[in-house]
Image (cartoon, rainbow, N blue to C red; front, side, top):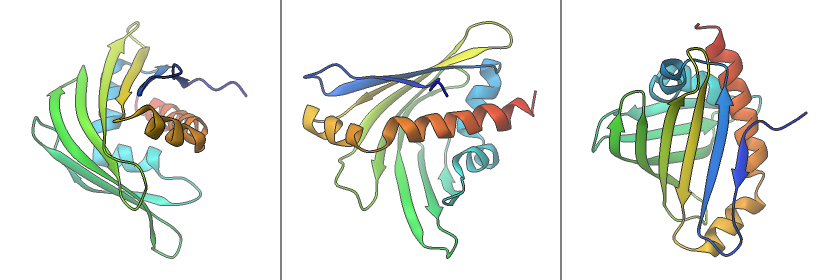
Amino acid sequence: MERKTKVHAENGKHDLTITREFDLPVDLLFRAHTDPEIFEEWMSHEYGKTKVIKLETRKHGGYLFQTTDANGNVVFQANGVIHEFIPGKKIIRTFEMANSPFEVQLEYLEFEPVSEETSKLRMHVIYRTGELRDEHLKMPFEWGLNMAHDRLQHIVSKLK
């Protein structure tokens, strides 16, 4: 199956871009990233349930979410600070994974209408070093993004 979420990483750089077109209006795509209930649904999967602990959708707001396994053990946690929040258009935030060797990264999420019923997500992710970015890319990063974005498309399309 073709991976619809594309990750572009140039050699020798310390950033990457992620792009994906969705068969969703831009307002629904944005809501999928800012509504805790919708976010929890598309971020949960057969390996764990995601819970939004904190989501302050405003400039200088913060967020924290956790994924737990079937036994309730936290297997993934991410948090950050929202630096810019323009409803329907843009979120600039830091992203930090707990209990991982990766340092905090800076993420620019841009939401763009393609038509009335389709939209595009473009993420520009900046790492402190190219080595950190390359280590992150060695993980099943692109596969996981595609899996999550496929779930987002499936779940949120029911809200149309």
